[in-house]
Length: 386
Image (cartoon, rainbow, N blue to C red):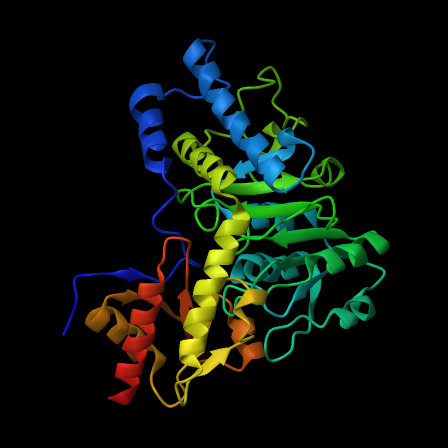
């Protein structure tokens, strides 16, 4: 049958389309600015530096963080998590993570086992809900931090970061949060949630381009972290030692300035329309899709069925059918783009009972329409009748 009309339902991987203004602002930098920051004593370089600082300020406001200079730019959330995990913890340290973590946390943490860092997983039930009551029993005298996601990229399940933050504060633990699936959609209050380091990416809910992300980090925690990469920063050039000043300490080399220009435009857009509007729309669309799936026999909606209590992600397991085949047919026959597999989170699937087959993940975005959701539901009804 085939179709030339495409429906994008893979926003948990990356948002598309990007916010209005992102592409023009990136082009503006490349075609009209072009220079570096902290490396040139001329007006254009100063103007570019102002854009970079505006982006830091916008991120600090968005996440209720008091110090824009402690907003560190990296290439993505994975790099930010590696910076914190590999630079901040050492032999003898013990960490806690959830049982639903993405490999952006688990792979660097598993590497750190060789360096003498250990970890335990906070249990989650078969729907992916965190068993909050288990945390304190897992804390040892050498426990240094809790590192966990804000929402699952597999099931969309939201995690009680505010309650976890209170536990961390009570026990003097660092609290590191992976906001890949929530930044720009759900409110995050670093002060109220006792978050010490918030790792983010620009290309998902923030509606910016790929290749730009970072972290917001408290000063006292930053002083405990050894930079993974060092080099020129354009500051303190008389020294061959790494600067102590933030953000320079963690921003060696040339920044992704086209990416920051694009991210700044996306953040302006989010400020105009409000993240509450985005969240409401995405949850309504996910609820509409979930309701359509509940009428289909043999289809398991993985995790909570209440779309208003999670991110805009609906993962399906088709039981006796081949999930990969159905994902392929959705694209080839109906132009519906999804993601199939383990989504870089194998232990999450073990927790949810979908390992090794994985799931077909449908993730909605602010740009999707009710008609697209209805078409996806109808397509699945037709495919499952075959």
